[in-house]
Image (cartoon, rainbow, N blue to C red; front, side, top):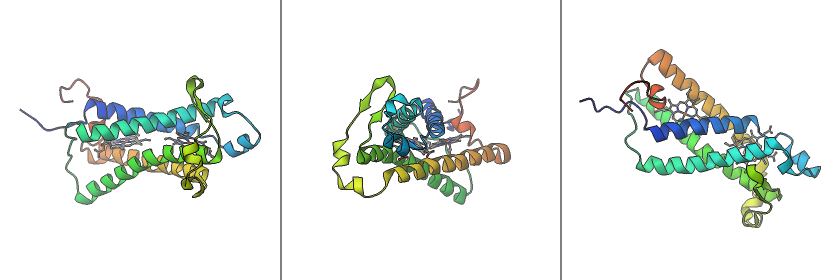
Length: 190
Ligand code: HEM
Ligand code: HEM
């Protein structure tokens, strides 16, 4: 019996791709000129790009917390033989992605809370004030809008590099790294 694990478990795969799609759409909808709109007195709830951006961004946050919990409980992940430096680099990139998946939404909440702008979500949900953030010393520590924008760009660059590396593994090294994260097609190995 072949017990080699070739693929991530189905929940890890589903959460990975859902996150990748949500991050990409949130990035595309990143509200440029947000500060100007707020100064003009525009209610962000009237802007579908902002509402979708914030909803998808919070979805990413929720999915990431769920994934981190699942990481501790899930069955063994596939171990694909590769050069030690490559393995260490992949671990480093994953660590960077996990960090950014948490830091991007957190800095967004710090932006809204410290600048006194409402959080506006799909379904008419809104949070007008975040006193816990507004009153904390953290609020004055940085221009969180700038930090959020920088990290929002950084996650796309790093994810792009990560995607390119997995395509390189598939096309050049043919070592099963990419298929480990893809749906199983007609095979009984999940
Ligand atoms: C993975 C999730 C996210 C990504 C990749 C992301 C990315 C970005 C990017 C690239 C910008 C700059 C857009 C530009 O200047 O053209 C931006 C701005 C912004 N995002 Fe996000 N974001 C995410 C999550 C969130 C969440 C969860 C919220 C709200 C809770 C949020 C609220 C904002 C706000 C208010 C701005 C304008 C900031 C300012 O100009 O001061 N974002 N985001
Ligand atoms: C915003 C987009 C993306 C983010 C944030 C992201 C993030 C991550 C993270 C955190 C992991 C570790 C997962 C775990 O251990 O469960 C991972 C694994 C993986 N991702 Fe992505 N990913 C993105 C897009 C992509 C794309 C577009 C591809 C393919 C073209 C891809 C291919 C893979 C593969 C093959 C693995 C397994 C790698 C290994 O075992 O070393 N990812 N990704």
